[in-house]
Image (spheres, rainbow, N blue to C red):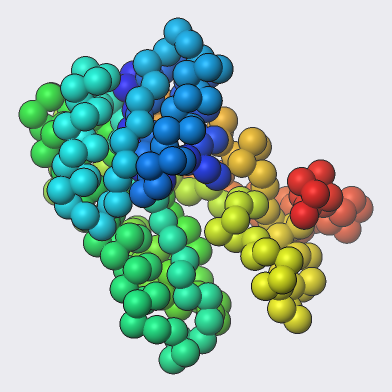
Length: 265
């Protein structure tokens, strides 16, 4: 299969790109930074010289760049069988009334407006080619949970679930499938602040993360395998299920998890 992943020069996006390549599929990576795209493409081509690896600079909040990403992917890969909307930012981790207009706009433009642009471009392209699967990345707030200081990010992720449900309903019976993708809580730079930015509540947050969080290397094989298996629109590939959360809480009474020490964090 041919796969496009937005926001895929680091973290979960890059981990998914590696997993697709490992399984014999071709991939186009993208991000807003030209140097990052060039470096990742070079690294992946060196590691998988037999695969078709391409890259394109894309700010998902720019409709023209999203369309260009699709056009280049279709040209280089031949088609786009799976499109993964992974790009996301959290630019204002503070109380809402303290956040600047710029940080609010940046989060909404990438996480929500950009998501809409990507879905529209991918749906139109997949209709033209005869079908395909789109996966929208959930995050904190998708299930309605609320936490202070992530009001804007959480609002955009709550909207991801609504948009995905609406698009799956609109496309029911068509060859284009829109689905949910949820990695749970993954240790990336989006989640873990630099040491000089860790406030008084960091140790408490760290305890919760040690209970529920996972590494990119743990989660991405599950996500990729799930995406390859999906056949129906509206399907969900979710790593951290309620049953898994309960199991980890019970296990914590006997054995403490530590996801930070092996990562040197």
